[in-house]
Image 1 (tube, rainbow, N blue to C red):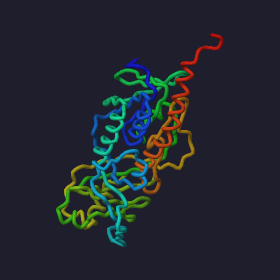
Image 2: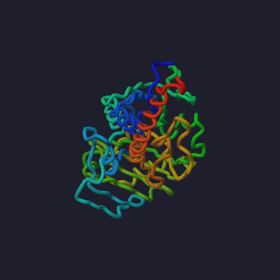
Image 3: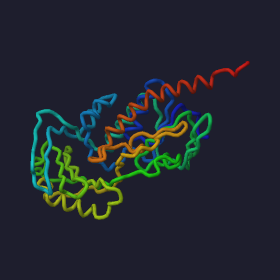
Image 4: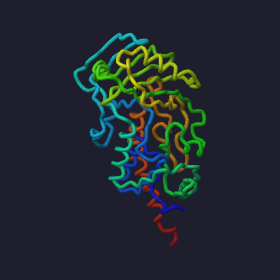
Length: 315
């Protein structure tokens, strides 16, 4: 066994895992976060953070905001239909690598322990603890949280969400001339004619544009790179741009009434299949699920500790 038995082990240092770790550590729980990557790492995501997400964050993430979007552009197959300036910030954009790293740093400063480069290989539930297995050793805790994304190894190990429905997004970071940044401005573009059963997006960042397409339909990943290229070709702000990074990723589609807990273990965020099935927004649901899970886990952890310390009957 690697180290002592913790109050809570959280697998995954994305928004759900980081916010939950922060909340639990602030209240004095011994929290260990296991992350398979070395942070910061690139994450496929448009990086749009909505107002409702910010309202649920337990701290200010202002240092990692890239741009404040003051409105939106609605287009269809590259033809602009509507451009709305609401006169106030409607969303903030982030680079997910920096954003996720900032969130987990807040958790560490609150008292959580982060161990990176640990790939979880399996989970064993016992009557009095949960054991997480990895190539670097086993870790034990009273409670376990799977916050390890849509391809959650914790969920697979526990037999949870076997019939998960996912769509696919492909995204690129595109460097454009100053004229392209000026043309896009502080607006988020949504093009619902970019592909069937999905949409294309453009989100402004400080020095480039994040561009992608999302197919909200299971098993339809073929041809998405071509769809992205077609979308880029018909967007005026992207002309003369250079693709800096390209990557695809599955997106949970929700809409499944299946358990997200078993024994001493619980899933949150993408691991629990929580996302908007139309737009694919996941950060809000990651943060909200962490906020909902925190008080339950605090009470349960306290009860488990009290039970463990209670003297046997008749002693």
